[in-house]
Image (cartoon, rainbow, N blue to C red; front, side, top):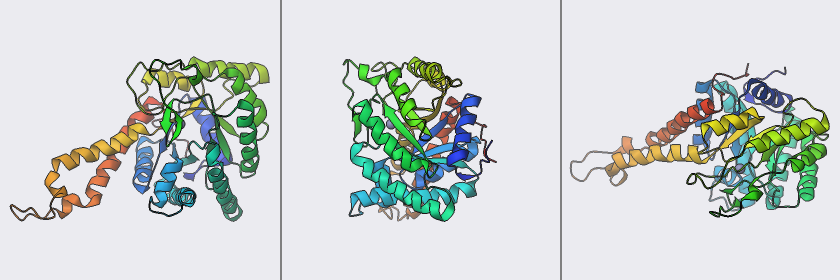
Length: 356
Ligand SMILES: [Zn+2]
């Protein structure tokens, strides 16, 4: 097996992390981050769980990383992601954690964002022999399959030279993330939420000869957390896709690297079943947002006067220690750390790090 060392794992090392997860029957959480608070919390959580981890940025998260006040939104999305990547390269190694660094959904409009990020990885590769990111995602699931696959193939050709991986989407993940996705209509025919195994086979035939890729297949998964009963998770779709590729392309078992989007709010049994069919990555965002926010919300309610007065008008008590952002941002971080321990457990990843 390739050397897997603390820091950002890319290329062969990243593939070794994926293969270890699939062989070991576990998956890694892929946590959306928006700033150093969430990045550091994920590093702390992975260290505590003795697990490897995946960190990712949505286009909105990347822009937020650079600052919402930055005048050029496209540039902010690029620079924010680059800034985050440098932070993670430096800190993950020092924390002693192996991190795969991804970007999340990019539809056709956002291809220039991914393209500019690959450009930054090309420069970084020149200097260091490593790309900035382990993987980017193109979500072209709104387009006809052939257009989805040919645009994905073009991007993968460029990324494969840097030993980067591409995540694609087939079928449609319900719900919406950063303006990408589909509204859930209650009681509607949600058949488009289920990926066709034949489409997965077409993707394999097109992309596998070019480079490493993973597939976000839709099996009723939904971004965000909704009232139960709206959509039925059908993980057997993943199994059918694996079986079709295995039979047709004469590969070993579970040849596809599958990604579970919309993991927040899912039942542990369905998560375990999906993982048994070759899911190595489960995206989690809504539940860690909630963990961050609810911890801070409780603090603000309990210390309400410290958020209204610098000095208490009744007894002259100074509140500096209470309103210091470190006091309550830290609680948000520990909220994420605690919630992720459950995610590592649900995915069977606790104690399974292959990081040496
Ligand atoms: Zn997603």
